[in-house]
Length: 485
Ligand code: SF4
Image (cartoon, rainbow, N blue to C red; front, side, top):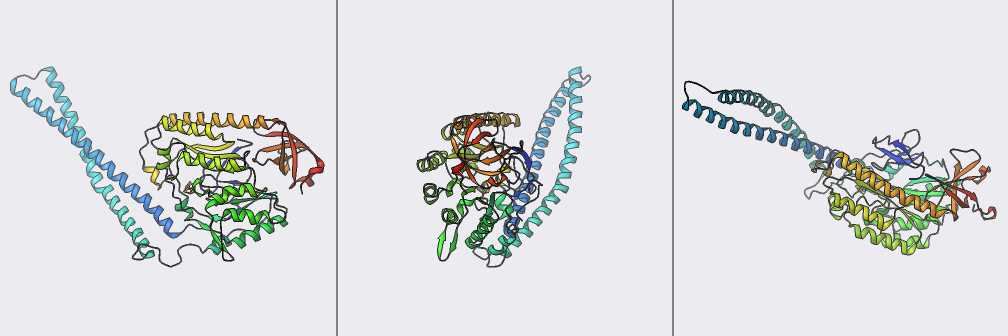
């Protein structure tokens, strides 16, 4: 991964590799800046989703307690059976030889005594379980009922939410965003919030609520203000930006329309969007790569796994072939587009063969860079109670294999770029050398080039790639007369 470093999300605490001082958490999708503060106020999740989340956790606790109890009862039963057998044997032997108990019989008596002790301990434990945890379970069930009642009070007889104010009104939700301030030539613009996909491993729909799309006029006004302050690149952000839907002047708008309209705002030289879901890669969005030159030559499209069975268990609702087909269609329109993605390795029940299907997908797509993690359960999510027999060590090994291959492909792409001319957005002074400026290629790689004139920051320039380093590129300004302001 280019120029990445480890950072912790200040909202959910998730540790991840990030590419810039301001980053978009891959776990809870919060926006954090270099001081670890949220730069965008996170709107409250809907009450209903919060309650459902609490319910899931309570149900999970109840289930676990029930299973604990059963396991203990079963082991007690087994010991009682074994003990009965032993007592039977002792009685038989005692009958045969009433006057004398042999050494081996004494051993049996001792064993019997020990088992009796064990029975006492287990009986005590089971009695405790019968009182305390059962009371606890009852408490949990009570709490559960309270929550169910609350949900009931919020829903009508058809189980539909009543027309009462249980979520932030859209305007209010996005009113809580701070005044837009351009702190760099590239600015995030939130266009939606929340997610309605409910992937089985993800906590976002419960904590951030169902998806809500922001009013288009607010978005356009914000872009105009950012451009006035020197922004050149707009990054549309949200948990699932390509499911954006709104009505503007009587016309239905989707993400492709926002891209099209934003590209006509004077001063917007480059547009990106993140994060997207494969199921929402509609034809209009794929086609917009052919008609809007400002749309960067990069698509971040999380795939998570290359195995259809795992994708189903993750509730991603697409197959690996559907993903391949989307990328093929995008590449028909933009043959040189770079695809980046997210991967989860070691999802509960993932077999070695299923992991190899992910490796095959990596070979087929040839991702430019990616975020990849070992699966870690999030409390209250359906996946968190799935049986998982793969050891941590095995999962770590799979992640290492996957990352090694992704890095190899990425390095290969870097080498192929040497000698090419790249249209880059100058983002600031190089982090390592004051006599160099830093820029980003269309595929979002960091490229440093020797130049002093800071008035170039925010401009699009053509840079010749001279060298591919481990985490960045080194270049030289190609043609001063071709500066794109
Ligand atoms: S699409 Fe799935 S992983 Fe992404 S935010 Fe929504 S629920 Fe979470």
